[in-house]
Image (cartoon, rainbow, N blue to C red):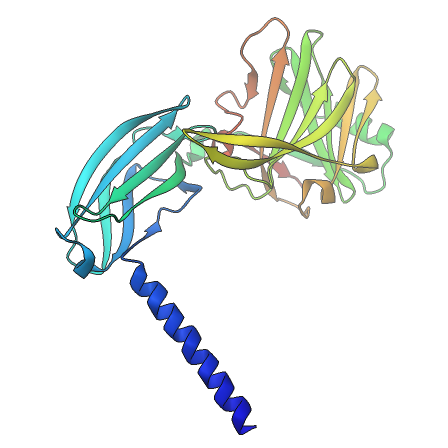
Length: 310
């Protein structure tokens, strides 16, 4: 028992020593913002921990860049004198209310007189504006209801318009239902869901799209793996939805989508809100029609909400 205890103490000492060495090697640590952060205010602060003895001139230089359309441009530069180990440093004002999706901000820092440098990216901004929210009510449906019963129930509620297309939503314990009537010139409709309702600046793995293809008369599920490549965020498309987990039915002149909850990756309950948006491609239009009108597909922070009613 004594030998075992000595071994444990020795191992703990080695771990502690290694941790100390690692900590000492980190002359400058940026703890905020971190990658994929969404700023909620216009003030950009950076939080640092710095070993001031390893700053030859006692300063750190910061360069904030705005990366848009695959090009980087300098936003603002600032040289900061660092006197304490911990510091919250104000770098500047971000005017864009929404900056994210494929565009992002980055911070490059370096310590003058040394080789110490680094980059924090990507991060963006999405302002939560209560008055700008658009909430769609999802009708509470009877559990075990047939497709026909569900279609009839949703035909009786007020639909939402996107151009000449319409849609309505409902739910029960089996799944989420979207009844929609695409206009004759529609080639595609996409229904977007943010289960966490995080209103972030970037799409995440959890965000789900249901894509209706008018030519194939079919639906498929899409979500994305994200990464940063040079001056842009890239989203690699992945699929979701198997067998009956995501299906399309005809309902008179309308279509009915059923998405089971496990496929959407969330648990339903009354009065739950989901981030929600719809994007319509019409053959004669170059631009996509969004719902709500200010929604941008790759920025969930601009989407509206879907409310699971009682």
